[in-house]
Image (cartoon, rainbow, N blue to C red; front, side, top):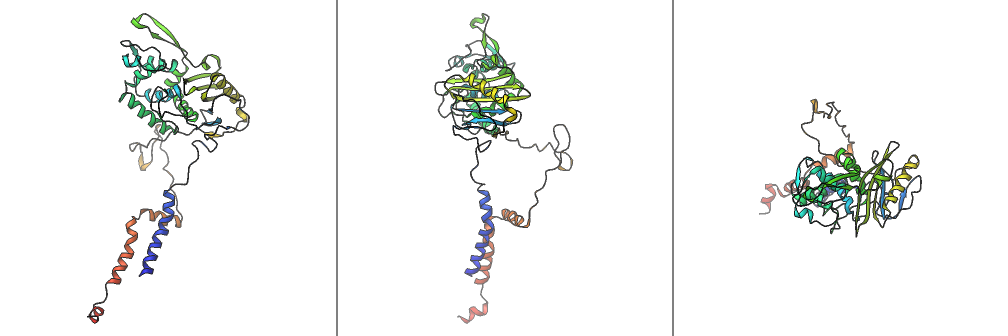
Length: 377
């Protein structure tokens, strides 16, 4: 009996052993975007030596191909300052109607940090507030926009964290949508590149990022005053697309810039720089454009998580239809060899089922013949 029970238990363990190992995962995953993209302060490039810059971390990538062409501590978690507003914009742009009118409040005007000049009682369109957010990095404009959305500032923070995960920006934690030095708020040069790529894919984001000047109303509706974009790349670099600058005491200078030349669109992100942020960005962009054909990718910008397919978007015979209406072929089926087929079957067997054979056999052994029981009386 013991031998039989032991054999049954061993068979169950053998069957479930590989399954347990598979369920536990394939081991620790490498850094997002590639094994070379780490938190180490080592400069990573292949094909040419990039210029020295003062920033503690940076990434240079091709937005169109997703190839990372040079990096330094790309996944180091640092304070993002106002470059985090790229993520704020990604969340708010599709949710707010730009023609809506917003009345400034005391809470908008009293917010800490940089301001564009949102005054209580004055009327602003959502469109103008986005301009104030991008050009002047106005925290007051950010607050005025956030409170227009469901859940206000807290709701925006929740959606920002969710959007970061969907984009693969796993280094980012948001606690303040303005980018101020809030406790627990971090991002990385790699994540900022993901935000820039997602943002520049939107025409409205790209338009705000590249706007050089706008006009804001004065108190008492006495005319307007000019607001200039703080991203100096727009004014002195050929092909510049702008994006976003940032500065706080703890974050120091941070930067997200992009430019298009010779059919290539590059993004450069820098974090924790003492000064000279525009010069560093210019040097990295120019070097990358010059050596583009000699450079080999050192990593990739991951693609956003795919949305679950719609059940309604299916054609005849179970084939899915694309947005253009064309029918796509069904997904290929995985063919299992005999060993894999057995393991696949084991997955479908509930754990309690492994105990059934020993229990049934035990019952046969305990049910002794009636004649044998009479002899013992």
